[in-house]
Amino acid sequence: MSYKTEKDVNIVKPLASNPVIIVTTLNSEGEHNAAAFNSYMNIGSTIIISFHPECHTFKNIIESKEFVVHVPSLDEMESIMVVSRNHRDGVDKFKSAKLTLEPSLKVKPYTIVDYPASIECRFKWTQEEGEYNLLAAEILACKCDDAFLNPKGRFDQVKAGVLHIVRFPDPIYIVAEHYIQGIEEMR
Ligand SMILES: Cc1cc2nc3c(=O)[nH]c(=O)nc-3n(C[C@H](O)[C@H](O)[C@H](O)COP(=O)(O)O)c2cc1C
Image 1 (cartoon, helix red, strand yellow):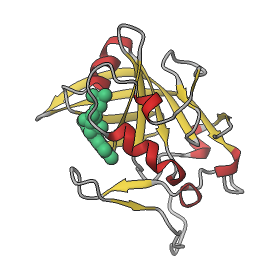
Image 2 (cartoon, protein in one colour):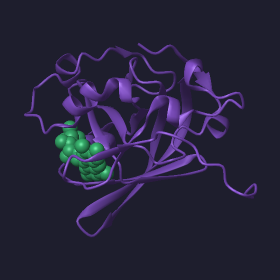
Image 3 (cartoon, helix red, strand yellow):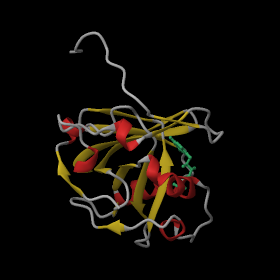
Image 4 (cartoon, protein in one colour):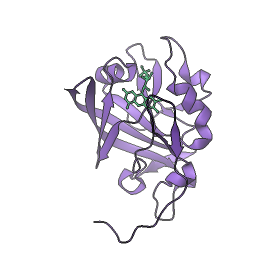
């Protein structure tokens, strides 16, 4: 269980290392969905995600215009794996993964309580790119659990043990384990 409160996304920067994210959406029947993604970039208050056009998450965002991005911690490995499976229609992924939902601050799709950081987003545009669709959204709000913030108020990717998938589609991940100090401050 994570106790998240609203934070400034530009200070917390939960997506700084491009970890695996879990995205929650609402379908036209008002049912919640969640799925894992890793092909995205975050520039300022914009996030651009590359979606396979057949995935429910993409279709739901086109319909409802809103979604929530979550950064899960390694403690939640089991639920990440359950959510990451290809499920048949009608399967309640949250029940299978033992995940709890709560209302979000600014968007209709709910936030997963169990993950330490979440970012609420509103659709901006989409564009076909080969077999995939790029989808851009504006970041509206960010919540983070204080237990995962460093003294500067930034999200601690190592403490969270954020995941990166390295041989997609093979399910092989690496975990953020330690920081290395660079030489000088970047501008
Ligand atoms: C770690 C991980 C990363 C993934 N990244 C992407 C991605 O960036 N884009 C994409 O279209 N699918 C990606 N997938 C596949 C989707 O999660 C998968 O197709 C899922 O079933 C989609 O669920 P949905 O149909 O409920 O949206 C990824 C899967 C995993 C496990």
